[in-house]
Image 1 (cartoon, one colour):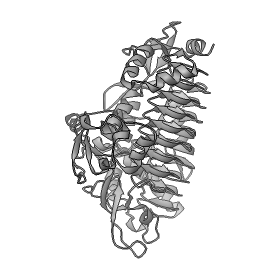
Image 2 (cartoon, rainbow, N blue to C red):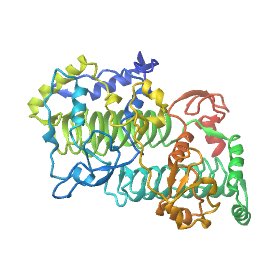
Image 3 (cartoon, one colour):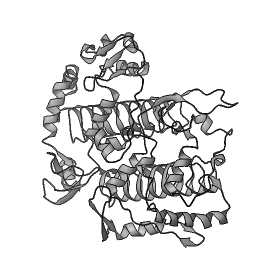
Image 4 (tube, rainbow, N blue to C red):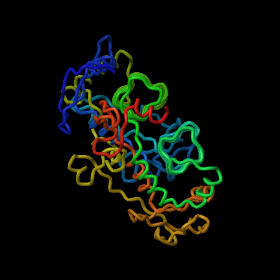
Length: 570
């Protein structure tokens, strides 16, 4: 992506300098909305890309689920009942369960507000946010997936996030494209199955403790392997079978070693081996002119992370099938011209500064939870609506006359071109993905004026809490009584329970019970990923300049793509 720096700004939050390029300005002009034949230009950002991402991330709670009452009761649903929600019971919002949210017994336009030019736009949107009912969980067409968030067309999932057409997925994050039987894993896709404690697994089967493997079967403790079968403790192998620590064995020798496998000893041996082998600066597959990492089938994606089949994307993460998008996370399936968005899903066009925009929206700005809407500004939970401002209906002419006045008013209030401030988030900083990517202690978060949730989830009654050291060494020795007890995490000391479907998974796959709380296991997976930061390094072989997600302080042997390919494939 050939760009020229035209301006260097100082981030108003962290104070660090950041650049604005000619391509950036072209994009901001391209997406600037037009009202009554007059373009309302979007100014360049005042925060650096990292702080912009942090601000957006404070609005997405993925993994903290709570029991609370549904705030809706009607003839179709009966009296209010207990529901599972991303909003804790102490949050001052109206929350409807899925069926009520999509039901016809209430109308979001009934909460419409006239714009008040004596108040800032963000203040008025926050007032509306506390009036309009919000949906308890995001997701559609699921079966037996009550304790999940942002799951779609999936079955039998528990405590998992962003599962698309999956089945039997537990304690996992981003399991996509018809994958099934997945436990404690991250970014599993393209029909992968029987995956445990693994990350970035593409079209694989029977994978345990693996990282970034493709088209493989029966791997344990392997990294960066392709088209491999029955390997243990291997790295950078292509088309190999019956290998242990990158050395070949006969089938009989391999099976004998596998039967006597000491997992901890093999983990340490594999770690020593992996330290001597190179890694590729960035993980790209069929890409053109891209930077950052984990991109497949992308063109002109700069500072893009975990993206597929997309073009002209910048400062974004977790995107699939998008074009012309900047500063967005979790956007997918035919989305274009999006800027400063969080969770924009399916057939959305020209969506700016918005959150959780569902299917088939167009030309919507500063909105949340809209479906099938066009030409809306500052609206919440609308369905199939047009020309609305703060959930109030206008004619086309009234809308196009009023919105430019509101935007001009936002300029006077220093709001124009800014995403919603974190102070408006329904969640505490520690509940959101911001804590994962930008971890802060309680004191640090409060000093930076972020909110914090102090709500503690009541722990269910159990007969006994077992120390992890008292657990049986093998799953064959575990009785069903474990379902009535809790386990004390060996790290956090926080108790956690085993559910029946989870126990069945461990038994079927001969996996011992976990000794760590699901939150600790998730945190460890997150820490094993490279950060969303590009550093300049030298290729360890040809000494060419490279940009990589491996920091210069890390001891990894980092090769440029050309040197890595020669080493591994040629």
